[in-house]
Length: 463
Ligand code: LLP
Image (cartoon, rainbow, N blue to C red; front, top):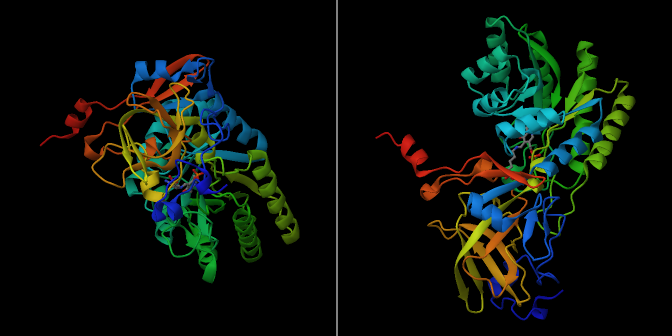
């Protein structure tokens, strides 16, 4: 497909090299099931529906911008992960992707555990009734207060991230008269093929303790001698939005090697390994994510094989998918405002949200798609950039996409695959009010996180 084949295509040199799309999709009204939540479809009148409800009705009732989350899709994804990993493994949903009390209840009902990385996430989890023993506590700089709370409530595991933290958690647990179950997070030296800011297993970054130079082995040595700690295993998380299983395989192999070294040195077989999260999802039609059962098989096979070779009993595996569960289940609904055609370049379509509800495009150069959802159109495709209403030229939601050229103010457009790291990274920049999250299921819709109000903004402003 060449760009010149497209009549409305860009002619500007910068756009030619920078652009992602080479040609518009064959049918602008089609919704690619890869990027849209499972119950999203167009009804006979051409309006997009989710959970059986038209987006036009949702916009009327809940306003825009808003995130609409397909609850049955979320639950189905939880079940797919739980089933794929089976009884001998544990799935911890990574709450940082998106967390609310409703989500915590769904996780419990679908048999998943939860990974939290702050006091706020811990509070949300406990408040919604997640049993503490099903919670893992993460973070490279947990505060003393957070550790005290986690130990007091009895979280299932704390994932230790540094030498100082090994001593700190041991000390706190001892003082509280407890023995805390812990894992040690190691950095395995894998360069995951993802954006630099979301890759986490190479050595020059802030997370974990390096396997290189015997540091992880030394961390195990220390943890095993401290009374306040019960070391149950080794943890590795190599990054996020990863498609290639090779990085996970190298990581699993290196973690098993460490287990063998620990056995040889201490006569102890650590019973658990956690291989982290990071599995990629489809943001555009070009992405081809792996299914949970493929991932479970690939990881299970490699761990079993490596353990057999090392003469170790296979440890209990756990994983921590966040994006892969919630990412595809939601879309952001916007109302189109100002439309500005720039001759020879592209058309800027402004929406009523922006970088305050989706910072990922500005931060990671993330790619998204967009569709006109309040109606169909047979108009010619036009190359657009969907931008927000913030005072910043980097306020881009979708960098390159095609929308019908009869697009008009008041139309509703939706950006799919915004369930992960959009509401959870939303901000009040320009005193924007963070949008609500509305769960939709079987013809019913309910707000699970309400829209912020101007009173909310003023309540914090106590000067
Ligand atoms: N486990 C640990 C220890 C993590 O640090 C993370 C993500 C996960 C699990 C879940 O990763 P996931 O399956 O969701 O990829 N804000 C970035 C992503 C940062 C991920 C941080 N850690 C983004 O919007 O792409």
